[in-house]
Length: 447
Ligand code: SF4
Ligand code: SF4
Image (cartoon, rainbow, N blue to C red):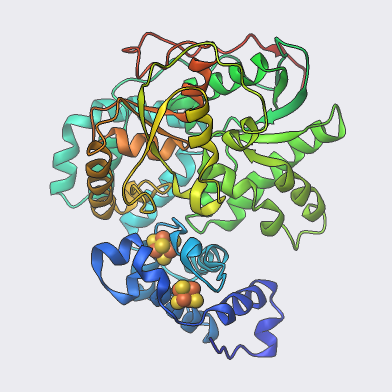
């Protein structure tokens, strides 16, 4: 694609990068076939190619974002299916991230929209605020229909997505060390994240048990949110300060006792941590440290694939529908590892038809675009239920919450099944909430 940025514009490294990306697009339109919003809406402007044109036009003319551009970019899930399909290697993720930041800086959203976004950006990354908000949302659940009727559909969506019950808090706080219970083979950091420890602490607890059982020392040293949620809302300064906080915490570990990897159990977060090197490439103080962190970042399934797992329990042919989270299959290009792990330890794993299409979760998307998210969930759940699985497994808390809101089939994280099969407790969702989130005992460490 030809571009016509001026030399002055190209002096901005973000514009220079956008120009490089735009020039790789050859307008072929292959990406439209796998774009969930184009599949649903059939509008070229809701396809990757259409959005690329909108972004090009906005940036080349150095224009503030218009309501039209905002509408179509907001509808993009950042699922990155287009990147998997594109034969020219267009880095749509970096382009749309830049467009979202431009929108945030130049467009005045309607007041209610602004307030909602500010609320989500403040509450979701903060464990304590999120816990309190979810407790309040439980009381508000019966009024979800009323909020929808008043035109406050995002509020209704938030209330509907709030879990009916909150699990107990993940044990401990601050920097914690989980020593291996087998001869030591390695040392990793585990990202706790923001939403996951509040609504599904069993996931990280299962990851810690699997790792320590196989001789891996685990340190939880991070500062909570990785910045991914706000990054996808275009709130670049908040995202970058969250990234810097995490980088500082992990750098202290790397330069202290050393780390073999930085593990992430939420693939949406993993995609962002793996991108820290790019996000902070122009920050003289952080560029090198960010790149080092990104290179160490791994999804939990990616890391476990390199270990010889000891199978302690025969899952007796339990049928698992594996939902491949977009951030894992498209963002990190990890599609086979989780399925192979599950098969190896005795589960019967089935691929979900139309597995390339997003479930509609996409960070805050299911709250900010509830109608499209609902349609995508119904399509996803329909495809899953055709398989008649005993359980659904996914590697991202956002997808788990989104899918669980549309089906009675239990939904678990892949690592919970691996933990169970290698000697851990049965996942709560399978055991009728028997309570399985007791992690290995941590050793408290000074900051
Ligand atoms: S990221 Fe997903 S929703 Fe957005 S343009 Fe690409 S395929 Fe479509
Ligand atoms: S598939 Fe790639 S090159 Fe073709 S239109 Fe889409 S983004 Fe452009």
